[in-house]
Every structure is written in C-alpha cells, then in structure tokens.
Amino acid sequence: MKVDMVSAMYRVQSVIAIAVFAIMVILFLIKYYRERIKKTALQLNDELFEKVRVAEDVLQLGCSTKLHNKVRDLEQKRTRMYLELQVSVESSSIEYYAGMKNKLIELHGEYDKLIVEILQRCAFEEEAKTNGPVLLNKISNQIRKIENNSKDCPGLSHVKLEHQRLKLVVYSAKEKGETLDWAYLYPLLKQLQWVLHNQLIVEDANVL
Image (tube, rainbow, N blue to C red; front, side):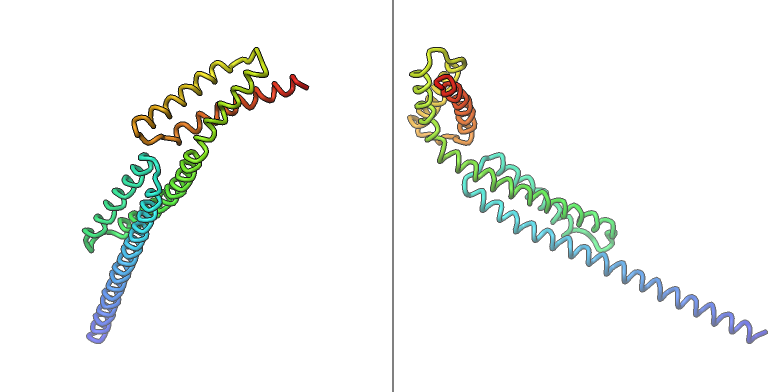
C-alpha cells in the first residue's frame, strides 16, 4: 500500500514537473514571438522613415502644397506608431504587436502610392511649366487662323474670352513678380486647344 502511495505521489510530481516545464516553454515562446513581432514592427517603422526622406527629397523639386500636407500627415501617423512601440511594456499582448505590424504594412502601401503620386505630379508640373507658355501663344495663332478663314465660328467668342482671361492672369502675375501656377493654367489651355483643334478640322473639311 505504502509503495502504491509513493508511486502515485511520484507520478503526480512528474505530471506537475512536466506541466510546469510546458508552461515555462509556452511563456518563453510567447515572449520570443512577441519580441520578434515587435522587432519586425520597429524595422518596418525604420523603413518607413527612409520612405519619408525619399518623399521629402522628391518634393524639393517643387510640387503642390497639397502633397506636402499628405507627406506631413503620414509622417505624423508613423511617428505616433513609433512612440507607441517604444513605450509599450513587455506585458503587451501578441495581438497588440501583430496589429501594429499590420498597420505599419498598410502605411507602407500608403507611402508607396504617395511617392508615385508625387513623381507623377512633379512630372506634370514640369510639363505644364515648359509647355504652358508655348501653348498660350499657339492658341493665339489658332484663333487668328480661324477668324481669317471663317465668318461664322460657333463657340469662338467664348474661347477668345477665356484665352484673354488666361493671358491677363499671366501678365498680371509677371507684373507683380508672382510665381505662375502653370499646373492650374495648363489644363485650361489644353481644353481651349481641343476646342480650336476641332474647329480647325471643320474648317479644313469645308475647304475640301
């Protein structure tokens, strides 16, 4: 009987020892996995900081204030996440760090889209600055050509008024020494050119 009790106690102690060991292993794995996720989240944040520098460098080319504000807003979001990770305690759950990691991955996607948008916007602004003045003069020539070839030109009076308004905007800005927003003017000039182009096609067809 005494032998059975000793054997039973030994088995209980063995079970307890195994259970304690298992719990210790589980706690170690939880801590290890939590630290690994936290480290990954911090690395993602560091990579985001590099993307911020890229975005800011591209913005130096002279893009719109709207894009500057977008970069600022994303940087504030990144900074908040970074501070949260830095002050997080060891007892923070795996779910917390996994959530932060996913948010940072999403923020990476936002930054990638923004950098593409910045590059496209800068390219457009450069095109507008280069081709805008040329197009302004070209439209003047097109208007004169249509007026010389046709007595009746529907819509030309509106085009002339809008063209004169844009010329006045350019002239006024130059007189005041202000920077012209060709990114605003260029699409308007392109629209006028499209109207005149269609009218010239009609004129050529009438000649034939």
